[in-house]
Amino acid sequence: MKIYQMEEKYRQFIGDESRLTGYCDSLSFPETEDEAAEILAHMAASKTPVTLQGGLTGVTGGAVPQGGHVMNLSRMTKVLHYEKTKDGALLTVEPGATVLDLKKEIRGLAGKNRLFWPVWPTAETASAGGIAANNSRGICSYHYGDARANIASVRFLAADGRRKTVSAREERELFGQIVGGEGAGGVITALELTLIPRPESLWAICFFLKTENAAARFVEGARRIAQAHREAAAFVAALEYLDGPVLVLIKANRASMAKLRDLPELPADPAGAVYMELHGPEDGVEELAGELLELSADCGCTDEDTWALSGEAEAERLQHFRGAASELVNARIDEIKRTDPAITKLTADMTFPGEPFTDTLTRYRKSAAIVDIPCYIYGHAGTGSLYANLMPENAEKYEAGKQLLRSWARECQARGGTTAGEYGVGKLTKNLLDGLLPEAKREIFETLTAEWDPAGILRKKLTTHP
Image (cartoon, rainbow, N blue to C red; front, side):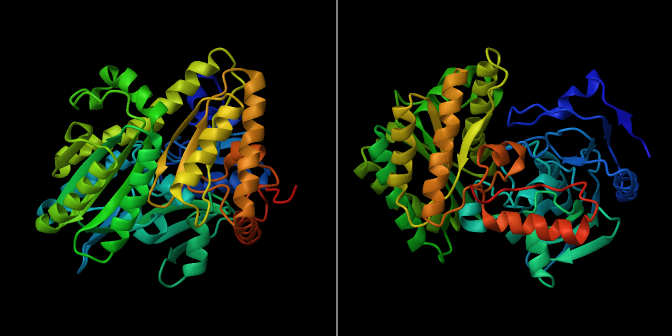
C-alpha cells in the first residue's frame, strides 16, 4: 500500500475544471482493485475522508479535496475483457481509461467492424469512471442516450470493503444509483461498455446564424425535423448550440489551437451556431441534410454560413470545434482568477421541462445582462440542457453571479426541473445551490452511503430545503 504525503509536486491533484482549489493530507494512486480496497480499509479504520478522482475534468469540484486523503484512479487503465456480440461488442475497462484511450483501444480491437461507444464527451482526458459517476452525456446523446444507456455493468468496490458486479439489466435500481452516484458509497473499479456499429454514413454540419432569434428559431425547427426522423434509418445524433460570445472566444483563439487551425475562417460576427451530426444510410442522411439546409435558409443562413463535412475523420474536426467551447470558457476563467483567485466557475447546468429553447436562452441572456455579467452559453440544444457560464470579473460581480445562479435554480425547481444535471453536484455546486439541489440526488447519496459506506468516508452531505 503506497500512500504519499501531500507536497508541492502533487499540487495538480487538489483542483479540477471548476477552478476550485482544495487541500489534502495524503494521496494514493492504486493500480489494481486490491490496492484500492486496501487503501479504503486503511482510511475507514482511521475515519479519514477520501476524495475520489479520475481525469479531473469535472466542473463542480467533485474531485477537489477538502482535507483527508485523495485516491486518484488515473493509473487503473487496463482493458480487462473484449467480447463480440450479435449487435456489436462488450469492452470491459478500468475506471482510469480516458476517452482518448478508449478510442485507440476500440479501433485496435474492433478492426474492420468499425464499432464505437457513443457516450464520450468532447474532453478526451475524461475518464470512463468519471463519465459513469456523473452519468455523463456526450454530444451524440440526443439519439444514443446517457452513460446508463451505454454501460452493461459496473464492478463496485464499496467503502466498507465489499465487492460487487452490478448489471444494468438484472439490478437496474442499484445500477442506476451507482452510475450517476458521483462516487457515493464506493469506487467503480471496472466498467463493461456497450459498443455499437458505426453508422454507414456520418455527416457533421455547423450552421452559423446571424441573430440569436434566428438561431433559436433554427433550433426549434431542427428539433421538429429530428423528432420526425427519430425512428428512421437516418437520424439526428447530435444537436448542439454555441452562442455568440462563445464563438467570439473561438475566433480569437483559433490560431493558437492546433485542432482548429485547418478549419475555415468563421463567418463575420455570427450570433449563434448549431452543430449537428447526422447518422445513417448515405441516401437517408442526404435527404435529412436537405431538410435542414432548407430550414437554415429560412432562418437567414447562407451557404457561406454553413460548414458540412462527411466521414469520421472529417467529422472529428468539427467535433473539436464544438469541444473548444468548454476549453476556452475554462481558459477565460483562468484569466479572471489571476486578478482574483477566489473566483470560481459559475455554471447553470439545469433543465426546464417543456420550455421552448427560445425561452431558456432568453432567461439566461437577459438576466445576466441586467446584473452586467458576461455569459457564455453552449450545450445540448436537442434536450434544452444548456450550460450558462457566468464570468464575473470582480468580487462584487461574483456575489451577484451566485445570487443569479440561485434565482435560476428556484425557477427551475418551480417548473419541476433538475437544478444539477450532467455536471453533477460536487463541492462547488453543493455550496452555491445549498437548499436548491435535486431531492433525487440527495436520496441516492444517502442510500448508497447507508448501505455501502457506514463509516461515511465518502459521504456527500446535501441540503435540499432552504
